[in-house]
Image 1: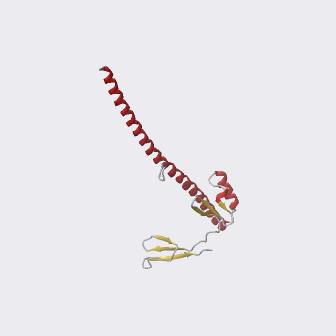
Image 2: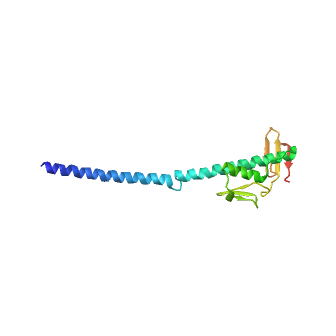
Image 3: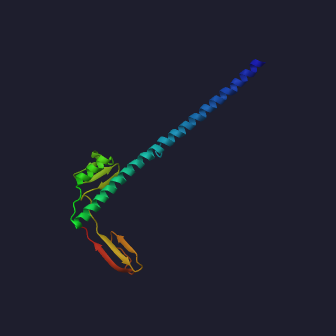
Length: 156
């Protein structure tokens, strides 16, 4: 009689073990999918890293262009394009293979950043409305009934 009781307990233990293993396999599959799927944590982190690096490069280029423009009015010297690119490469936010020196374009994954005269400047239109609002636009499209004064900055 004791022998039958032991076999019954062993059968229940074996079934519990199989169910536990199946549950663990399901949890492992869900975890792996969460980490590595198209919207997985690792993929999203990688995309965020590229976005952050591209934004840092864009910020450096914008600052350099602003310094260059200010230097035109104040007759001060500004670092050259080569110095800018080398500075970003030394900082680790830019790699040589991402630079197209001929077209003055930086390409990071699917982000394109113009650092030279490669991208044409556009006209900028500014309007001051009678309520004190100052509006900037790339087109001459304003509510003319509210304009107190308007300006246009021509591209060079």
